[in-house]
Structure formats: structure tokens, C-alpha cells
Image (cartoon, rainbow, N blue to C red; front, side, top):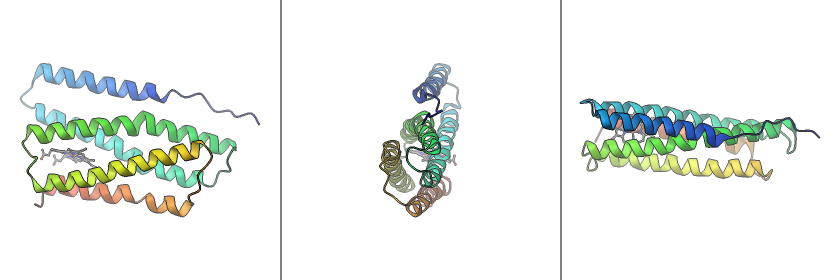
Length: 175
Ligand code: HEM
């Protein structure tokens, strides 16, 4: 059967996103505004939003992908969507989030703060879930997914719960 799926270059979107971030960071470091910390915090939050958007959407795609028979047009389209979302948005956004988050913590001397330790533990858990999603994308791409739709519906909630905890810790700073 003829598959009408466009060839993809997901690395291009990721490369452009990372290049724009590097140029912005370079400009900020050269300009050295007194508000540099706030600028980098803004970039951190933008990267966080992109990472979270992908982490909330990708498992929904897995849920729908379970209904598409392997080899079908629908299944091939889901494969492209999953690969592009992962490579063009989720992976680069995670890198930028980590780099800027660690820079903010270092610049503000926050590494002894209890709330940051809690936040880092939850962000590590989020990164581990990210790693699991990479494996699921590979399994779907090779038509060897054996997990149920129910499994993906449950795993779908994990990034949401982690995100709620992370945001409360960094905004409320309860300890
Ligand atoms: C990857 C590791 C991360 C590190 C090391 C980190 C560290 C930081 C630091 C030091 C700040 C500045 C806090 C302040 O100025 O009071 C910050 C701000 C923030 N972070 Fe992160 N972060 C990380 C990931 C995340 C993630 C995954 C999320 C959300 C899911 C997140 C959400 C936020 C938000 C919303 C702010 C702004 C808080 C405010 O200004 O009140 N961060 N982060």
C-alpha cells in the first residue's frame, strides 16, 4: 500500500530553536543588562512551557496510536507526529530548561535551599519519564508496542502531577 507520509527533518526545527536560544543568550551576556537574571528566568520559563506542552501531548498521541493497526496510514502518520514532537520540541526544550535552571540556581546561590533539592528530585523524575517516552516512540516506530491503551492513559497523568509539584516548590518555596 502506498504511504503518503512526508519525509521529515525534525532536527532542523530543533537546530533552529537551539540556534535562536544560543544567539539570545550570547546577546544577553554581551549586553549584560542589570536584569540579566530575570531575562534568563523568562527564557527558562519559556523552555519549561515548550517541554511541558510536549510531555503532556505525546502520551495522548500514544493513546490514539494504540487504536491504529500497525502498517496503516494512520499509524504511519502518528509515527511522524511522535518523532517530530520529540526531536523538534521536547528534546531541545529539556536541554534549555536544564542549562538555564542550573545557571539560575548557581547565579543566585540557591544550591543549599531545601525547595531546590525537592524541585531537582521532581525534575529528575520528569527527565526519567522523558527517557521512557523516547523508548515508547522507538517501540511504536518499529511496530513493536505491546503496552495497552490503559497503560498510556495512566502514564499520561504523571508529567501533570510532577509539574504541579515542581511549580509549587519553586513559587511557594515552602522549605
Ligand atoms: C531542570 C532543572 C531545573 C532547575 C535547576 C531549575 C531552577 C530554577 C531556578 C533557580 C529558578 C529561579 C527561582 C527564583 O528566582 O526564585 C527557577 C524558576 C522557575 N522554574 Fe525552574 N528549574 C528547573 C526546571 C524547571 C521545571 C521542569 C519547571 C516546571 C515544570 C520549572 C518551573 C519554573 C518556574 C515556573 C520558575 C519561575 C518561578 C518564579 O519566578 O516565581 N523549572 N527554576
